[in-house]
Length: 445
Image 1 (cartoon, one colour):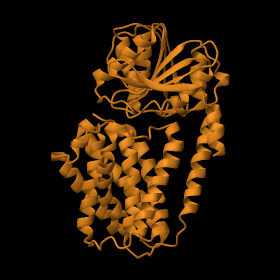
Image 2 (cartoon, one colour):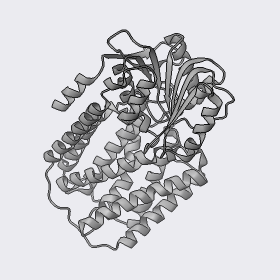
Image 3 (cartoon, helix red, strand yellow):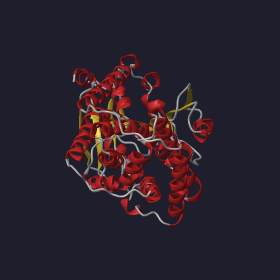
Image 4 (cartoon, helix red, strand yellow):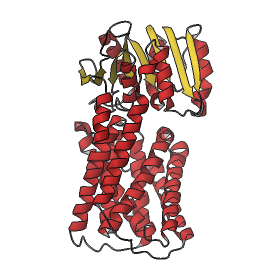
């Protein structure tokens, strides 16, 4: 709570609302306090939101700019569905609403959309961070900065000199050392350089302090949560690791083959990521069928109540209270109904995890096998997206986020399993947390 108070004190004055344009576009408006050096329209990337670009938007306000940070259609709180043409219309109309001379800053998809618009309409100043390659002949802008990390996706790195050449002589390009795809919007040093390049006071940005306080809040919330659910050791059994890996590989193959012909959860209407959810459902069902264990009934209600309460704590405290400073964590009207659907789809895999992997003796072998199977699942998902179902190739972009999330969820679920001594209750916890996160993060179409 102390870190939350200090973090809130660092935030610039802001308000939020919906721009009255077509389509209606949610925004966060940051005030700089003094006479602004300019107005900046910030556009996030694919599967992002105005919360993901919150750090760079706040830093721009620190540096002396008035900032409008918007949600593209299908993202965050936007009630519209995602389509590229609709996203371009939202940016065009937002720029017109904010008046001529508005600086535009885009990351990833946002940068690509801005580049496409600049091929046919004029801009004053543009900042394009990690733009994916597109085919254009000219950039109509008085001043352009294009930057990407030296560890970004190869195609994006290779596009940097091409885009810089198209925009000459008014274009400056940066390759950010040791930076990945999202480094330009999260790295304090890079953010300060962008603010300075725009003519703001880069020395006044407080990104480092914000990130540090977010980390303290997250660690404190997790630590407090663990203290609330003490537990013993899980009852363990000896099992051959190779056989367990074969089971997960076989289940993944079954999921890939089914998805080659039909996506059972396509009706969720989540851009590409309904493929991930369907894969998890099919792999989980294949594992349950191969394992052959029988349902023993719910038994006592207490473990399920405690697991649900733990999931609500994770969603509310580390999730909404802390992570909402860098991720979209709320469920708008168009997202609520997806939450129970994604939760149910994840249950078979999590039940299999708790029965098959969690109880393996010794514990270090169980943890190692969990990490291996998370990697296997993701490898098969990406293989299917890049070969059999290429329309879902976007999943490559969010693979790092999925890896981090699944690893963290595995260890958190272990705490709940040890507390409740119930594999089904632990699986319920994992499914609820994943259901909320996926419903909040992923793009609606």
